Each structure stands twice: as C-alpha cells, then as structure tokens.
Image (cartoon, rainbow, N blue to C red; front, side):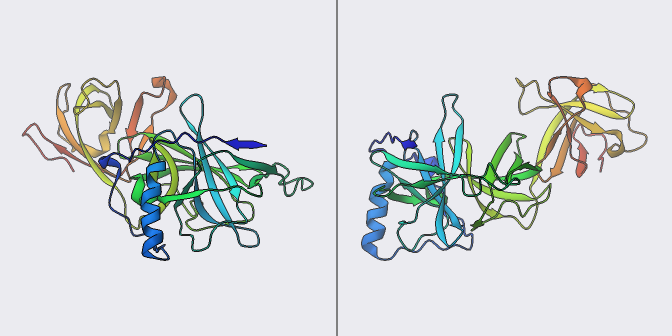
Length: 304
C-alpha cells in the first residue's frame, strides 16, 4: 500500500513558470466555462512541494493511465504508473491532478507468472480515492527542448531514455510500456531526436512534442590546449566552470595554427555534448557532436 500525502498552500506558480501553451495535437478543451473557472481556482493547489498525477494515456481496456510523480529524500523525483478506473471523462493529455488528503493505492503485478514480464507492476487508486484537476502541464510547467542520447531496455517492459539539453545538462526518463497506449510515446525515438518536455523543479514530467527539426546552439570557446588531432577548449560564457570540450582538427582549415588563448565561435546541432573518453577522467571533458561550424573570432580567419 502506498499513500499520497499532499502538502498544499494557496500560492500560484511564479510568473516565470507560466509559459505560453504549446500546441501538441492534444487540445485542452474544458467542458464548460464553469469547469474552466474551477480548474483555474484549483491551480493554487499546485506548488513546489506537491506530489501530483499527470494523465498520459490509457492502460489495457481503455482505463485512464497516469504518471504519478513524487519527490524523494535526495531531492529527485520518482515516477510510477497509476491506473484510475473512476477518473473523470474528458481528460486531455498532460492534465495534472492533485489531492487535498491521502490517496490510497494498491500495487498490482498483472503478469507475475510471465517470465519475461514478472516484474511489471502498476498502482491502482483504491475505491473512494479523490483527486482534483489543477490544470495542464504546458500551462503550469517549464518547457525545454532536449535531445535523445540513449535508449536502453531494462527488462520487464521497462525502458530508460537519456537526454541532454542545449547547455549539456543530462536528464533521465524511465517508463514501463506494458499494456500502455500513450498520448505521446517517448520510445518512438532515435539518438539525436529532439523532444519538448514539461519540467517541474528541473525534473522531466512528460513529453509535450517531438520536434521535426534540430536544436542549434552557439557558444564561444577559448583554446586551452593544442594537440595533434584536436583542440581542448573552454566555454567563455562560463568563466568559473571546469567544463572542457574538444574540437577536432578536421574542423580547422589547413594552414591555420591555433594557439592557447585563441577564441572560436562553435555552432553545433541537436544540442548534444558527448562525454569524452575516460582517459581524461571524471567526465569533465566533453566533445562537440560532429555537426559543427567553427568561426575564428580573433579577426584572423573564418573556419568552416
């Protein structure tokens, strides 16, 4: 048995969190103006300490399926699959529900005798459980574009997907796909694909859209070391950072002799900065994905 203990206060999200709605193909339509007003009023229940449920699709038999997110003692978030047979009608992908009290749940292993999926489980809300709609993810949460860096099957229908944003910050998204029909399926991805995610307290909640293009970002770097096949550089916009990147010499024109202290503007696509080989230690050294355009900004030559 698992209990949902909600900490509620009448505080709206800060203005920086209230971003414009993203069109994702799942229109947010309320049944009436009265329901819309009630939903707006209930958004005060959603604050930085809340645990919450997000509607993501259906389970076997068309039962509404939710992603239940709750903070852990170390500041991270866990996410469980929850089935709610008595959920209200008219749900839209990304709808957020919260509670004013305890929500009893029972853990279910639907195929415990199946060797391939013996560890598959979900939680079902017990009879009498009540949740209140607080709004929708695109309205109440931060949105961020990020690229897929890996997709791994963990067994028992569970997958782990890792992402990286344009600043090189890494994110993890885990989900069980057993008997699930998801409104936006993050498993429909390849490495390098770009997704827009809803984030809460800098933790991934649900995907909002899959981008058709790529993320392009630009940074200015300064040469720290010169080697035969690559340059070791540091971003100049983060002077206190220990981050180091590599630029292959294949992007530097023949006849140009880079030296320590030179600055370059690097444009890279897909927002991916990959970890450099282990001989550099502790993962602090990264390399730019091989889709780059390098421009020398010391006023000497343009390097493309």
